[in-house]
Image (spheres, rainbow, N blue to C red):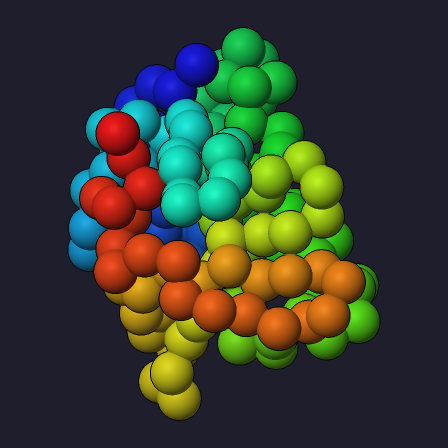
Length: 130
């Protein structure tokens, strides 16, 4: 179940990862921290921002973006400029990519864990939400 998150937790994540999340992504996640998304061929669980406001929210957000990104970076061929934002439960991730100035693009890519290839899956977060 998705629930709102305070913007301060998004800012903490940006600082920890050294990136700036896209405006539409921050807007969606501020209203619903996590949730589900759908692409043409798969269903995705969106990783939340780590919410430390109380024990219940800590528990609900323990699979947060920072943790999932750090784990994904242990896989061979995970792009160095990628942030994992969703998983399908089979090892693939939806990712956001940063440009040279660490701003993440609105485009969402599907990263295939078996090959390391990635392809555009959506123009922005709103295309994943039904």
